[in-house]
Image (cartoon, rainbow, N blue to C red; front, top):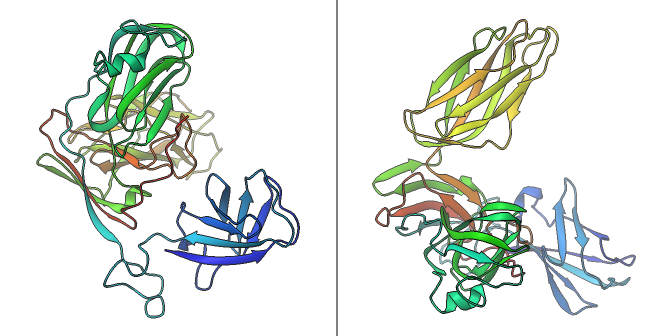
Length: 411
């Protein structure tokens, strides 16, 4: 459903120009979704859609639209904004909440997303050590597309999932295929010799390289695509992987107090659940001496990252956080190690590690897609080893389960 806000253009709006709108009655910045907004411009007789034609910012007191079109909106044009609110349209449900009776509330849908029982990841399941030229010539055929069509390359997956690849000679690899709804999608690697994709492909129809490569392998990873748009992982209540269930609504907080930081040392925390580290924060409990303290966090999977607590004289309560942690997987009963690598003359710290039970959820991309953005609906990376018999189901409350995300980037 949506709310309307109208205005008449007082001065011409060119590309990158802005339009200011008032909030509809009984709404504020938190009332609206991050996607699905539209503009009707009477002088164009055309409906514009975000994010392709404009972007929108919900400010504290008004709404700012940044116009991205190439044709200037003339003075006197009437603009009618349709501002999307998460939830179904009136009339789709027999029982619904009317704003005249209950404000600031909407009915949502409890949804169970069945991701199937995916087979094991196969890093060369699509391409088995082939050469590929920048002109598109594949070792086994004239082109990659022809090889796939001829059945020489396995271009269809059992479940929508991410693509992995490796090759020799630094190059940009581009994968073209379709999602589970048949929409064309394109994803490209960074310049390098390996690739772990973020988008969930159902089929691969073409593989190309910016520079000729040899020993190319292309296959599947463990990241599974969601069938509906996930706007926030907070919408998900639980995940079931085979016979194991994870409560996604709760988090585990491990507190590790360091000994004196004046010498190298380690402390350990034990996770009671299998899950992923989502955040890590450190705070000085006694003042540091004459140097910063560098704390490195590790799991069995490898180094999570490094936190540097800056020197601050005699002050305590100095906080620093780890952003973009890596190697976040921790097993039930697994350890999280905090190492003090630097040696200030004095000081101590406390480190809090936040662990979310279950596999790693990634929300769908709301902005216009590119060859390097993530999946437009969202993905899930399970903890279980995929084996073709472990069923993965995700349960949550989705405001709009029929929404399939922004348009796929098709090149």
